[in-house]
Length: 108
Image (cartoon, rainbow, N blue to C red; front, side):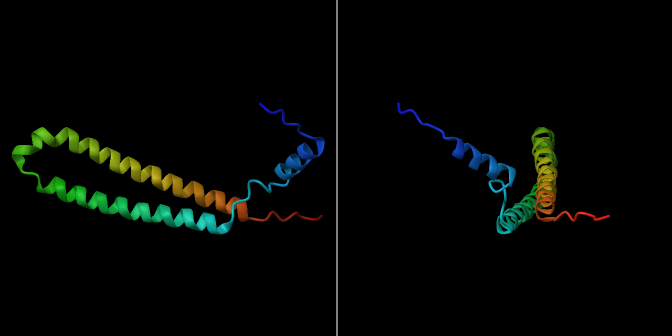
C-alpha cells in the first residue's frame, strides 16, 4: 500500500473550494432536468392512480371482500408516494431558489 502525502497547499486549496462553495454549486440546467423528471414521474403517478380507480370500480361485488385489504394497501402506497413526490418537488425548488438568489447587502 502506498503512502499518500497531503501537502499544506492541497489542504488549503480544498478548504478554499469548500469555503467558496465551488464544490457544491449546481448548474441551473441540472435543477431544471431534475424538476422535469419529477414532473414526468408525477404525471405517470397520476395516470397510475386513475387506472387504479378504474380497477377499483371494475371489481365485482363478490371479489370486493377478498381484495379490499390489498386494494386499500395499494391505494395508501400510491397516495403516499404522491405526497412524498410533492414534498421532493418543493424541496428541489427551494434549493434552487436558495442557490440562485443573490443576497444584496444593505448599505447604511
